[in-house]
Amino acid sequence: MTDSADVRLAAVRRSAPDAGAGQAGHGRGDLLLATVAALFTLAQLLLVRPGMGLGWDETVYVSQVGDHAPAAFFSAPRARGISLLVAPVASWSSSTALLRIYLAVLSGLALYLSLRTWRSLFPKRVVALGGALFATLWVTLFYAPQAMPNYWVAVGALAAVACFLRARADRADRRALWGLAAGVSLMAWMRPTDAVWTVLPLIGAALLRRWWRPLAALAVGLVSGSAEWIVEAYVRYGGLVRRLADGSSIQGGLGWHTAVVDQLRSLGGRALCRPCTGSLPAVAVTLWWYALPLLAALALAVAVRARRTVPTLTPLACAATAAFPYLFLIGYAAPRFLLPAYALLAVPIADLLLTAVGRATGGWRPLAATLVALALAGHLAVQYEVLRHTVRRTTAAHRDWSAVAAELHRLGVRPPCLLAGPEAIPIAYYARCSSAATRGHNANITRAAIEDAVHRVPVAALTAPDAPRPDYARGWSAHRVAGVRLYVAPSPGRGGTG
Image 1 (spheres, rainbow, N blue to C red):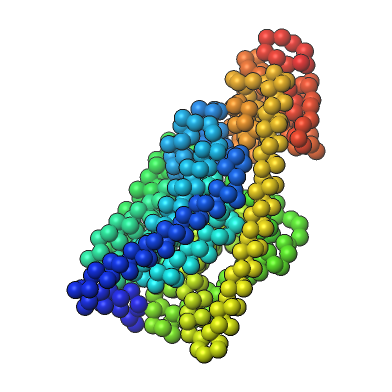
Image 2: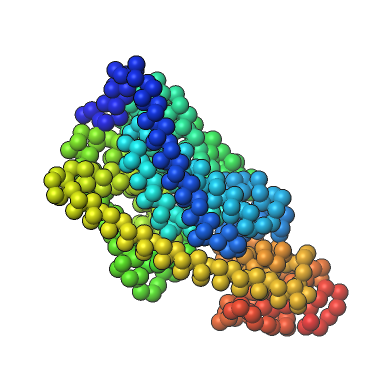
């Protein structure tokens, strides 16, 4: 079956003398995509406050390259791509606002470049609407300016799938092959396992149809992007198999876990739903998520009828494999996990919406346009409200961490210092201390080592208010601030409880 990409490429070849008109059309399309990307960056700066403070995972990634605080424990599932991405700012400045602005601008540029790869596959208005649908999700706006890897996996996936389709349609398109390798490399650089899951349909199609050049580009992207992660597995984690096993253990043991309801619970603005308990958000908040499978199926049906199945089926298939492990293989949820799937669904769904309006005839067209506009307006209102609530709650939590750090300094726990316990990692970054844990996913020290550190540097243990006092903190002075219990060790060089 001939798909639209082949038809358009043939049409371009037949109309080569009118290249000037084609360039003008591309220019207008580029301007439309650039406008979407620029508004996306502006929305981040206005709605996600640059001074929001760093989150838990962000402190881990940023501490690897900055000198604000000692590097936090780097667990097996993590990859260093996002640390290297923020290094141009974090390596010389501890300003969170500057880092947010840098990432907002960079994420807008990345969105523009990834959307641009779709120009020859769908009309420019479809690509622009798809970009807008993805960019206005609260989870996209919230995480794009953060030092987190998931948004970058999403834009890498968006570019890689488009370049694969272009390379499939035109074997002479070397730029598409390079773009495919670069997109996959970006994904693997950020999260190697996510990259593998996302490109499974592309690998399968390339093997089945013997598209050796796209297959080679996929291999180059996976190898180049994950090389550092694999080398580090042998240097620090006891080998690749051991690192994968440790990563599975940290994620609760990969296996059959239905996390669909957990993802629904997280849509109300929960950064991490683990354990995922409590009631579901209001139907108005989750309605768009329920609609996604139906809209995807309708988009595919419309594409089949229009004889352009492949450009629609491919991103839908990659979205399904990208989402599968987070819906069915782990026992908890975070809304950011599904960002690659949302990005890949956006263009086919945009095509469906514009086709529905365009095919309506007579008096039905204004009605169809009105209904689509109202649905999108309601969707935007819901996304904005969830974003506003999430930003406000997150900012308050980060201020609490800053308050705890200030109290620790007042109690004499100042750099160089050590904070231990399950609550230590983010607060240690704010206090400019090292962090440690004797058990749990971030275990990196023994009780004896903590007791030895007490004689050399200021040490404190941090726990939740209802958690028991750590064994090694017996006799340490107890304090409570901002919902955290602090146990401060006697000052080095003198006895007592301080």
